[in-house]
Length: 256
Length: 256
DNA sequence: ACGGCCTATCTTGTATACAAGATGTCGAGG
DNA sequence: CCTCGACATCTTGTATACAAGATAGGCCGT
Image 1 (spheres, rainbow over the protein chains, first blue to last red):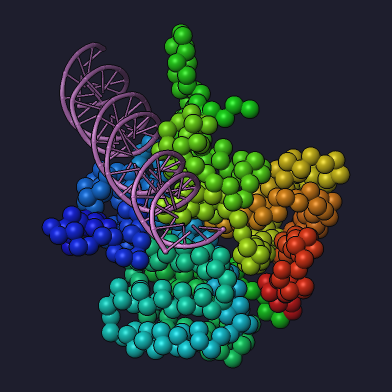
Image 2 (tube, rainbow over the protein chains, first blue to last red):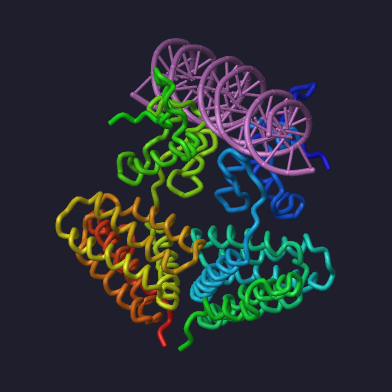
């Protein structure tokens, strides 16, 4: 795969192609951001890997400036960590940080599901149903990258249904960060994931705010649990044995 | 006030002063970020005002590069808005966006208060008490800038008491954004604000998670209400008359 | 052989230069 | 009088150059 970024505007022999008419070309910085983010989220760049400006600039065939800005943009999103004079690396998270992110995500997803159930909108729901069907269909087939994409899409649609863009942005950034942590074993439990999606959507459809919030919260917390159990099993219990249960309890919304 | 940023390392006649020993000098970018943020939050730069790179570079006596990066960092925090080839302006928010931010903040502050009440920590509580006393004392005196600082400090301490840094970061960024909106009439209701702080802290101290969460949520929502009422009164009802009540209901955690 | 310094090299930080997009102005033509 | 368009100007986007901090390997002394 060629990594070069060109903004689609090479010097053609016959000047027939200005910048795509009506479609403003994005600054290189933004293109680089997209590429870097994609490479990080896809696992092509692994956690802890150094991101050397010069090398990336060469890879992408641009100067260091857009690369610098892209790196800092991703740092603001929490996908890369940069230390003042030592450069940037793909972010990695401790189990404590992971737990914290999961706690917050659970709360935000619960809030959003509540809003989606309250403001339910036929158009949105139809779109969500389509996404859900496709997801459940492909859950068995494999192709991790496609499943990750569909999962992100479902959550984005649900965020749109909540009609709170501030909330949606926060959820997306947090989701990307946790996905980065989960990436190594992301294929786990796709079927269960989509079963949970189905349950959330049903609660939203019937307008049961309480249930939608509870299910959305658990959806996140259980994914976190599965991950922590897996890593604890692999690493031999670096945290307490029931850390996941503690986590679940921590963010649960109080029940009536 | 001289706006120049120097990193404290001028060419002295007698080379007696390297970079302050043991204290790594921050990159200019970070210094510029701090200055810009301070100028924005203090209202020195008003919402909508253009941030021209050249002018800022001259003001701060640095090149455009650190300024560019600083602007983008603040854009990531949501304090400035940048349009691809048209430059950056100090962010401004519609009433809809403001409402959304308030909703999310209310939820996050509620979650944090719950965590602080659960994990209550004597040291933290003592520090919070000090801050509270100082705040209540100065609430009558005026000096808006000092009150804003103390308010930020109280919320930061409460965030620390919640022991979730991810959550704390999100709350701080959101608080800055809402403060930017509220800035024009921020002096309003300082006494009430600190009375609410007191109530929240009391709930945290006795470990009543439910009450702490409820009070924290209301603290944010009521501040939002006060603001929206004020602007609606000033602008002649641009949104529905009971928008603030709707907002309050929107994020309230369900009661048992 | 070991520890510490010193230099060679790599990488980031900052400045400057140039290219190209956006905006505002003024005049010609209707 | 108004509109359209070419030009002048302002501002951002990108590249390159140089300065300075960080790192690693080797050399010297003991």
